[in-house]
Length: 121
Image (tube, rainbow, N blue to C red; front, side, top):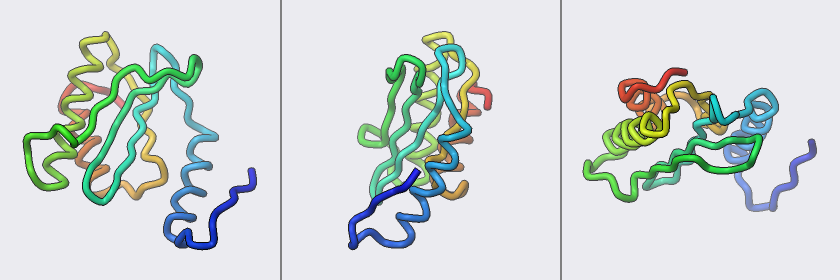
């Protein structure tokens, strides 16, 4: 798959998107085991459970409504809220899709929050 970018796209973003494509070739979510995909911006972090077979989002959560301040604290809270919402829909097992981001900082905090909330991956 050939990726096309604008000339202004930084090499860091290009590397992340190439990594994302490689990850998505291997990972797919179903209704029984949806994909927990993550997006982070400079201020906020978003997570959602996606059923790739039907192409629907099951549950979504973001730090836009988080009560805690600080990026890592709010990421952990987002992980806990998405785990709570997933368990209310009888979903325990998920596939974690880090979207090409390095597994540390806010991504790791979100994953740890989801695990402490009861999700298994």
